[in-house]
Image (tube, rainbow, N blue to C red; front, side, top):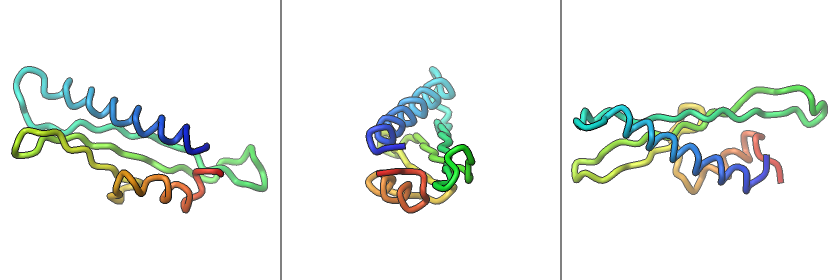
Length: 97
């Protein structure tokens, strides 16, 4: 996977989490989080047909006290800033140059 594909996947994950939030809360605001999990394969460099594992990007949408929407990201269950997603994917081996 390259960087433009990753950026497109992040935007898609945000949109799906927002749709999930809107569907779960509907007309009455139950303050339920909207969640989207996106799985990315990690391939072995020596054998391109062998999958070495996967990286899970999770986006959560929740409403703040002031009524705004907050987007939080997790990679493999650990919270990460949106700006650090590319670097974390590169260190985990899911991103190629």
